[in-house]
Image 1: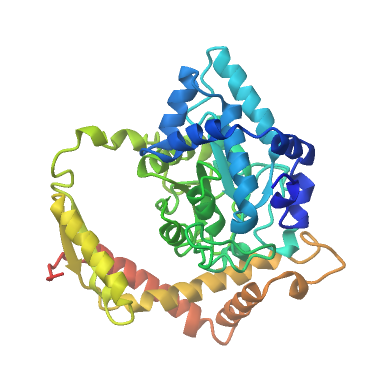
Image 2: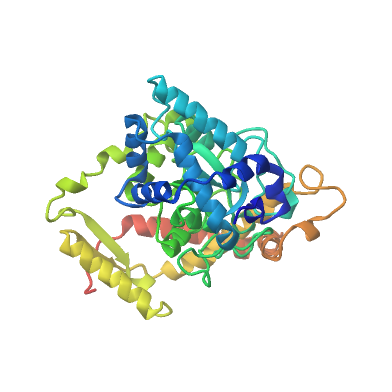
Length: 437
């Protein structure tokens, strides 16, 4: 596959791909032996970020070689997987060259020097198409970086492209994008989860070393699970939401998708610096370097989880949950106990009310947040919201508008808020009652 067409799943990508660079790259691919060597050290071991950083600083490789390897991987695989909706080849190549110059001069570009990142397409990157997977934002080029992207760039990360998602984060399969469907790299007949399915699939397919996603009700954690990678939803308010296109503002979080826990901790440490937390509701003091608290795997004790307590909510493994899923949860609990941890099963009888309450609150906030997309400030004047929004987005706007309407807000929205508060208080006050798993 020597044509740039493999990376052009939609017209949007053609605007930003840098065709001349890509054609030149396709003609001058890395030799097979070189590719195998790089893939070996990028896929083996635990922390890819740490290993790549060490090799860069030792002079064993360059940022341009790392970038070229991942561009090659995208060229070969992304037509079938569909992880990316656009790529910034020119900017990425320029940034890689700058990082190599700094390293040659004995300067340290930062903890993420030379690491290629994919950014979920509802997180703003300056002068790069940021569509949230919607036709209504097909021509939207934000003039600023989100705070988390600014933090990544300041730490030497290379922004490789924007990853696919369910439109405005509304979905759990990444089939609701206006531009393309994303496949699971492990089995292309299956979905990668969503709404951050593009980010999870890109990391699983080794198209980038790390990616950013957003999580409203599982949109990082679920696709990470489906694709066999690590997805972290930080505590709400830990990271700035500046530059994240809102779905449900009281739930939305930005978080990393990586191939290891240590890599997730490194990325979280970079993004949680106080300078990037203008609108944070939690992080006011000096941020923690989360990865420094992780034990060295070579020095782990026989029981590394000794003294740690874990809990399973009894109602989450009851009727309605597939027995194979329950078996995996129970097996994981037994593995934790073998490593020295204690696993309690706690009961929360009203837990089943959480999901309907979440959906009422989420669609209500979505109907308000998406009112700004009116084909005047965003979108084009020759189309309408009904034409540019997808079916799932329109359904949620309608449900949210109904729940907030004058005659029904007390019955739906207010009750959902009461359930939310009650559940929060209940979980905080639970006594850890042990059941037999």
